[in-house]
Image 1 (cartoon, rainbow, N blue to C red):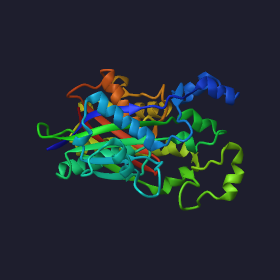
Image 2 (image 1 turned 30 degrees about the vertical axis):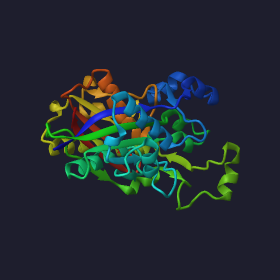
Image 3 (image 1 turned 135 degrees about the horizontal axis):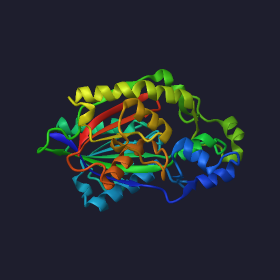
Length: 335
């Protein structure tokens, strides 16, 4: 029995932030400057009061309708986000009820960012191939716009909000649906990408809210990123991770039909692609109209690759993600 990606859907908030709008806020920038630096023309932004679980819910409902999936057939829910509704209860429990999943289903939160999809996929694989579940719904949903300071041009250029829903099921007819994983963690780099004042350690206080009262208080915390360190980290860990994924799955680079990485930004991915000597025809990017959507970026890109005919039934696709933590993980999937 093998774990197999059966279906993907995703949801984007209606409101968008275009490069033109950013230029009106930051006059020193031009639309062309932003696009050259990021490969992004617009990003979707949630309205006030809409949180990650709302986007995950919409993505889940879209999955059910788009693919004709009966919610009663799902026996485990994994919700991955860096913006949980509460410290308790688990947001996955709330989503189980909202989505109409059976009360016999399991539900867990995975508080992860950039590598959330591949980590969640590994948990789903473990549940299925150990016989604990047959149908796992993986929701990956993030709202980075809520933790970016309005004056932070760099981060506002890059990030967008989105939710994705992926159904992973057991399949007795194939033996290599979701392959073996490569994982890595280096917490020494945690400070280089962090949402400050967002949890129980050094929590937001009256002084924080007063300092940020002109921008609504930054009540969810504030993202800070050292771009040069993040770039160096990606260059350092991604190439050996790709080699490890291939080795663990008994494959050569030439056996991969398509590479889909975490959609960080076009510049970083283009440098990685050249460093890894991957042809443009085998390397898929999808962020021009949505930005970097954190944990939702890989399933959205995979969905669009399938839609564009870049990945087809029988294709072998290498998925790799990396970022906040530092963390990185990846695998190979057969569609």
